[in-house]
Image (cartoon, rainbow, N blue to C red):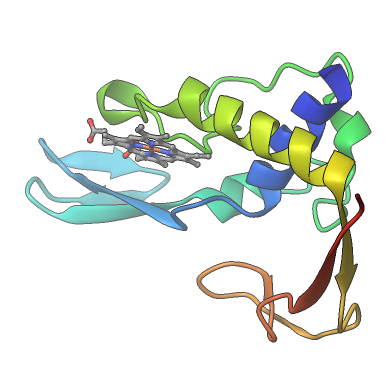
Length: 139
Ligand code: HEM
């Protein structure tokens, strides 16, 4: 289960569910030299944080072991958002993924039909063929 948890964190780092989160600016704000007036809407793109090589080395690579003894600094891992509107279903979501993966991996064989399929990167990095696969029940 410890390794599965790292697989999940690595998966939602690379391929989060929503690709952006929306916020309204509640007061005039200066951020990194940019002025953002009160009332403007801003988008936070998770991928800019989750794929930042200064936070995650070789960010394009799927490396579950990067989570060995690694506790991300505040704001550097936000698959469930942040602040007062952060996802209330995060624990349930992770539990559901664990249960699904447990039974799926034990009982099914998964073969991607086009493992070299090119990727699209917006809204997220996905195989262009939507990961077509052959799934076979093992027993
Ligand atoms: C892997 C699974 C899930 C992911 C990646 C995910 C991700 C997110 C994200 C990024 C947000 C926006 C947070 C923000 O704006 O800061 C959100 C909001 C929310 N999620 Fe999830 N979520 C997941 C599963 C679930 C589940 C299982 C439930 C409920 C059973 C749930 C209920 C909600 C609700 C109600 C909100 C709105 C919270 C608010 O606006 O105050 N989510 N989720």
